[in-house]
Length: 286
Image 1 (cartoon, rainbow, N blue to C red):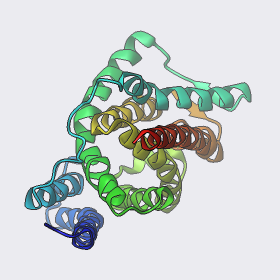
Image 2: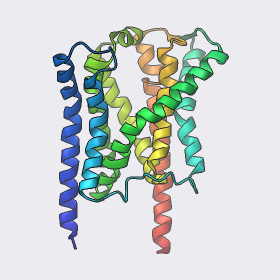
Image 3: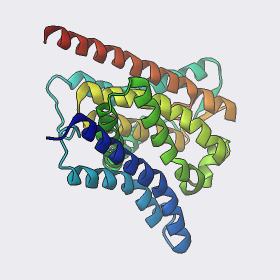
Image 4: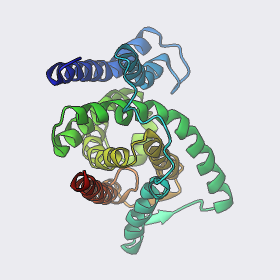
């Protein structure tokens, strides 16, 4: 039988492998696209490498170690329906609050608002993002989060490490893969987008980690991520609202703004409190 020291050493090794390959994958994708320039814009082999390398690495490590017990693959609907509902609504509601505050101060203009058109677009985007975000969520919440928990480090280190790796994995996407028209829409440079991205995604990560720990399933996180991308990002890129300046974008925008990020952080910390109380109750009876 493996001792606890060996198990922890193996976990650390696997985490290091995952982190190194993950952070390198996007840049390998950039190099691949430089070698193969004649590809469909926005749908390149480099983008594919960037997207699938983390989840494939996690899958290989789990198969090699015959370890799927904490991956959260089962949906676990029983007892978690309220958390599934929160997963679906958290980002859209917080985004509505942020953009509502901007509207109160006259800092946003709404355009092309036609519910009969917007709702089908959001529905299609949500469905697409359920599939796309399986790759991210099965890697970060389905592998990295439970392995950090196995190391028995405190919650703040779990948030910091997983949040930093998750956000920095996006660096080649922000610097290279993302179309320049997005930056013209946001009114910000690529470098600035990385900086704000690390901050915002680190705030989001607390909620993702706690949702996984509370429900013990990756599917709540997948739905939550699809709601964020399918609703907030779709409305932003669709030009359905225009914020007054670049600064107001970083403050009030539902998908990249600091107000929404802080509110999501608060929701995550509330879930942490609920989880900790639940765990203490279980321990008190054991």
